Each structure stands twice: as C-alpha cells, then as structure tokens.
Length: 263
Image (cartoon, rainbow, N blue to C red):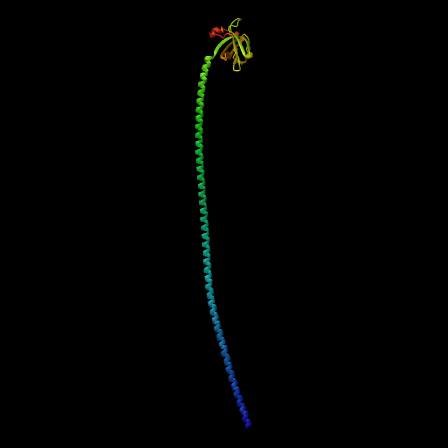
C-alpha cells in the first residue's frame, strides 16, 4: 500500500511537475510573445521614428535645396549685377578716357592755333620790318640816286663848261697822241691832243682806235684840260673818201669859231 501511494504520489508529483512545466512553458511562451510583440512594437516605433526622421530630413533637405536654389539665384543675381556694374564702370572709364583724349586734343589744337597765331604775328611783324627796311633802303637808294643825279648833273654841267670843241685835219696819230692842223697846210696852227683809254674814237661813225685814224682825214674832237694837257674825250673822224662823197668840207675854224690851242 505504501508502494502504491508512493507511485501515486510520484504520479501526482509528476503530473504536478508536468502541469508546472506546461504552465511554465506557457508563461515562457507568453513572455516570448510579449518580448516579440515588444520588439515588433519597438521596431515599429523605431521605424516610425526613422520614417519621421527621414521625413524631417527630407523636409530639411528640401528646405536646404530651396535655400541652395535661393542662394544660387542670389549668387546669379549678384554675379549679373556685378557684370552690369563692371560693364557700366568700363563704359564710364572709356567715356572718361574719350573725354580726356578729346580735351587733350582740343588743348593740343588750341596750343597749335596759338603757336600758329604767334608765328603768323611774328611773320607779319617780320614782313612789316622787312618792308619797312626795304622802304627805307629804297628811300635811301632814291636819295642816293637823286644825290648822284644831282652830282652827275653838276659834274656834267662842270664838264660841259670845261669841255672844248676843235676841228681840223689829221697830221699824225699815235696810240697816245693826235696831232691836228687847223687848215691842213704847212705852217698853219697845229693842235696836239692827248689820247688815253677813256678816249672814244669813231671813224665814219664806227667804233675804232687811234691806229685806224688816216692822215689827212677830217676830225672833230672834244677835249678838256687834264693836268695842263688837252686830253681828247671823243674823236669823230671823217675819212677822205667820205669827204669826197659829201662834196668836200668847209673850213672847220669858220664853223666853230673857237680859238684853237697853239702848240
């Protein structure tokens, strides 16, 4: 009996143990399920949080992209404004250079005009001085010419007063002396005239020399006293052939009626 109760006790114990194990297994399974559920929920929460974070990140990225686009637009606008400002500055600089060059050209032209005006004024002054000098020179030359003319007239009048005229026939002629006879005959008064380089000799109206004067030809001579000697100024010779062609000559002394110098 004790042995059967032992088996019963053992069986009860085994049943209790089995029931305890089963209950423990159910509890463990429930715990596992709870843990799994908790993990799933945690995972879902993490996923939700990750999705929210991703959404937030996407929103931030969108905002950042928008900011970047806005920044790019601002940069592009600033670059365009900078280009426009640089172009405007370049244009203003070129206009300033053109204005400066134009002003420099105008100044150079004005200076050239001033120099030209000064040169023209100097040239006009020089011409006036030259014309004045020429006028003064011409006046001086005219005065000198008048003085020379007056002197020449006075000298001519004096020479005319001093000059004398004589006619006669040639007795002999040499390069420095001419001997004339008043009537051409022997024993008649003779005239001795000195000849020099200034004596003008004409034979039958042609220029000649004392060597061309033939003896016996008719002579009309003008002379004046030089150093106490009668010196011929001009000798007009008429050859014998020319005398015969004109029908002879008259008495030269009777023509002039002047006193002949005695030799």
